[in-house]
Image 1 (spheres, rainbow, N blue to C red):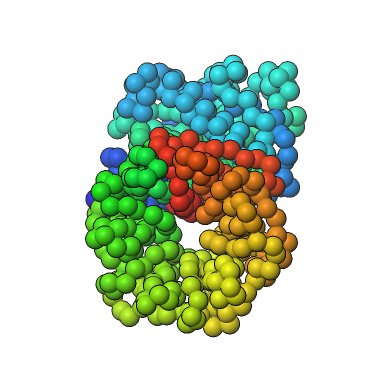
Image 2: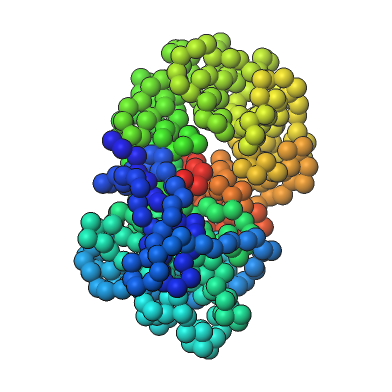
Length: 473
């Protein structure tokens, strides 16, 4: 099976909506395998002069509480498309809704979506009716278009305007297969978010998690994956064996996770393209808590031998002898690499209670970093490298962050049992799962680093152990 390709045009047109030309094959079905994005030259086919697209996107300070109008995307002519049974006009509405929901849920902006706004004409996409939007007190305007080609592919364009200055801030275009249209919408939201906030994008990404069904004392736990907004949900395992703690490989091609396939806790790597899985290590001892190295070459895991648990590293390609990184009589668990791969944060009870430690990637220079009140568990290094998220246990379980040296501890959540934090690709938002007192029902939540913007992510069933992957290529 060939990998999918979402072809993005970084350069922009100035006289007509962009048309990105595909130079790669796309999967006939949306597959979570690595999706390659390649810069391409694009030309227009609606009467303008041919030539490369040009444009710039620059960083700014955070735009707090900015009002953004996001009307329905226009279309050059109504056409049928497999992406929407009602045609390209209806698809334009759906595209804008996805962009609106992405920007609404991040807590930075005040977007107004297409259901409350007039629809611009196709010609107005590159020549906005600024008076209309000034009258609606919009500071920023996101306009877009969608066109369907004879081969079924869709061209989606996204434009960001400053209404007060009546100027274009950014534009970008993509060619996708019909079932990839949501990715184009997420790319549009990423463009707007990055241009206005100065932050790196994160909407066009995916999440692996454990789907939970059944009564508290007999839960069925399956491996599942979905887009960052919960769409395109897919179960990976059938539930016959309990699955736990999934982690995406950096290229989205594989998922490492804990499975009880043979009745014992052991780590498998599932290949999303081939749908085959292999044991990380052939040891008969219990193995758990897998984590990938940033370059995808290694997998960290914990293994219990004779009542003692240590952290090991093994080649992600299989084979070879695992390298033991810790060697203490305590329980050493987990392990999360720093973004540059030079250090590992992990948890250990060698001090008498769960606390967080940091060591070099080869296991040297192990040192405790958590000294605040409570215990420290399930640490994960931020993609930026500046913070570590962890589960703070002090009566209740809550999500907290600290610097890599253990300073500036901040508690972000205040539920009864919030645990297992995972970072968004841009290092600004943290997901975790929350268990309800009594029922034990769990769900995925996310919070930003202010601790103010807390929301639940909708899933079709109960959910735990989220793992946020990087931005899709």
